[in-house]
Image (tube, rainbow, N blue to C red):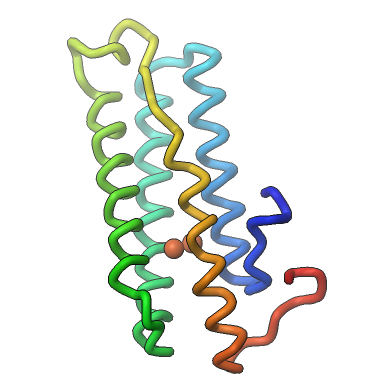
Length: 136
Ligand SMILES: [Fe+2]
Ligand SMILES: [Fe+2]
């Protein structure tokens, strides 16, 4: 994960890293024309990881009364909808996936982490969590 995306909150950074690793595996599976079911399995995994991660962040935001929770959750919801569409697309018997070329758009990926900067700063300001060394 690019250092500029580190929030400095260990648990969130660890989840971001795992999400990035699975997303990279999807991109590689598509690039190497792996079977549709391999791509679909990875998409299901990516979706479940994101759903869990977003729920954790949204719970944290409510606990600390983060003022931009609505906007932040809106980004989460948009990303989940995108992944849901891609997940379904890998199953479409008439779609690109069936021909071994699922046209998946990963332009959403940087948004998974870049919008967490404000939340991370707020958490640290809240004083309830310590930032790790070099995470700033
Ligand atoms: Fe996040
Ligand atoms: Fe987030």
